[in-house]
Image (tube, rainbow, N blue to C red; front, side, top):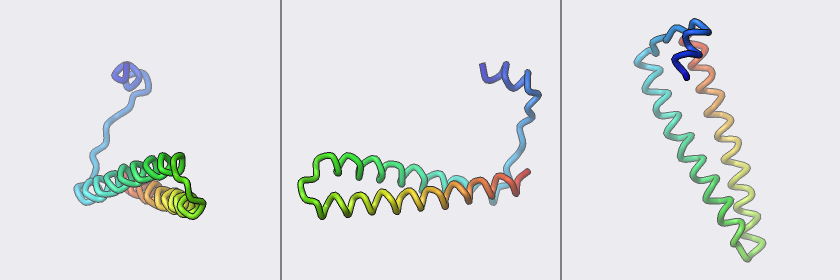
Length: 83
């Protein structure tokens, strides 16, 4: 399916510079870790009994969202540099 779409859109693969490749790999690993942290925090909120813990988890999720936004912006910036 992807091969057909690529052929229809005349997509040409582009090489990624080695420097950007290592940076992208690190950024994607950090992104995956943050997503796991966010998922775990959301699960903990569901079972947390204390309001203090719930507030702390909500703050953590908010920080994670900000960190994810920074990482995703950096990934897009690296992608633009490669073009």
